[in-house]
Image (cartoon, rainbow over all chains, first blue to last red; front, side, top):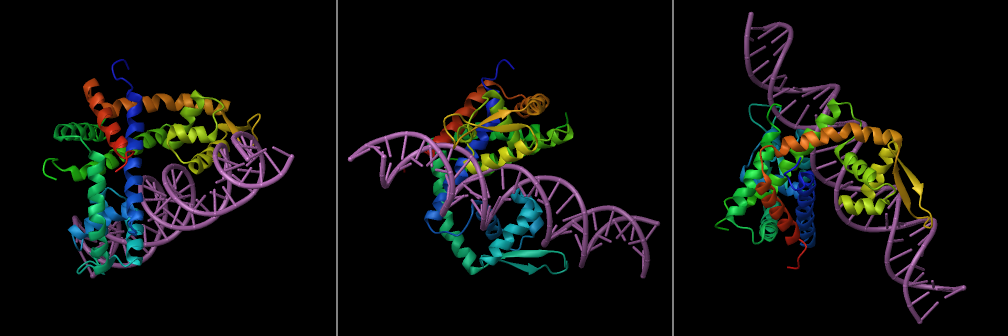
Length: 147
Length: 147
DNA sequence: CGTCAACTATTGCTATGCTAACAAATCACT
DNA sequence: AGTGATTTGTTAGCATAGCAATAGTTGACG
């Protein structure tokens, strides 16, 4: 209790920081007239890097729940950005593919995402990045261990 | 683009880390039979440290939207943990106060929150904390600046 | 004073997250 | 083959988040 300046605040700081990043990115996407939410972008980005991925696999790599993935894919399909194709050999599965329209939106969004990323990281350097990864991974892993 | 190991990942890492902290805390609260969500806890904690605070002020200190605060207070009031009292001299405002029951829940939740906090921070030290604050604040502030 | 601007809280709408329950399909194992 | 367990995706319910719009008050200022 003694030596951590204000250990109490770390949850709060992470929370407000991620909110800020999300809202900045969302605002920028809106301003550019790109019809994607931040989470929809995350899926679009993954799908276009791994065409035909299944929904469960998508859930795993994006750390989202299967129900969440179902709904985001529903929305993306409604917008005509991706399509579900029946997987051969397993009638439970779908393979998710980008449409031409989806690939086009991805091209439009990509530089914006890169810009936000760059802007957020700012003048932080490689050593900061190493420290950052160390701390985040450490916190994350502390919750995977037994008592 | 060259020197940040995988700069692309920092958004993702923050996002998954905060989710992990939240879910661990929520699970612990549930296991102890405490009828609070993480966000409800955040408000309860603030209110009990600042009895009579207004909803807008609560929104500001917790970095939540006024509508979100309205709805969380609704839930807390329904559970009998807090109460809205009309502010003297301004009929638009409410002063939010803890009830006896609310203070009791807070006492139960407090050590759990402290334990989760301790567990998450683990073996990280004071220097890590300084770095952590530096990096998070830096990212946050980078989004408040003009171009 | 009187009007218009600003403030406080609320409501509605959409999206996401988490849990639980479920249907359909597939797998494992006898 | 046949039964039970597992996997895949979906649906439903609740909580949170953000945005827009609004009602009721209060404040500022000519």
